[in-house]
Length: 143
Image 1: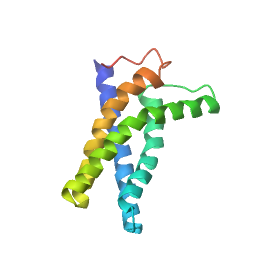
Image 2: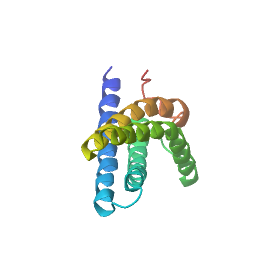
Image 3: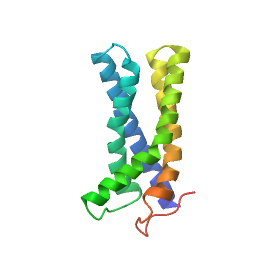
Image 4: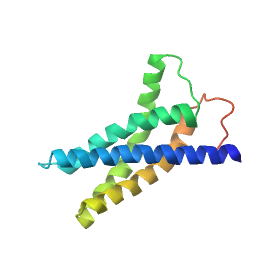
């Protein structure tokens, strides 16, 4: 039970760090650029900022996974990213839906936080099952 609590707390912390990086990047992009497709560009760049942060933290501290070499790690990151395509789509749809429905930055960022949270819950299960499959024996199953 302690291991499950540890994983839950760390995963939540890492999700919060990645969310802050993602949404913070979006704020900066919107501050710098307000032209055509500014919202879409900010969402994309925010996603590209949060993704590697979350990958490194989860790989090391949640799944305790050690890559064999740089090539293996690169392939693993690509698989991790591919598993995130659907959860990223969910995040984008929720954030953009809030933007469209409410028309304010605050509500768009709230939608982004909600979309990221939902996506992260689903992503954990995908990563556990398909990405980090050769993890340490010490990692406890979390269903």
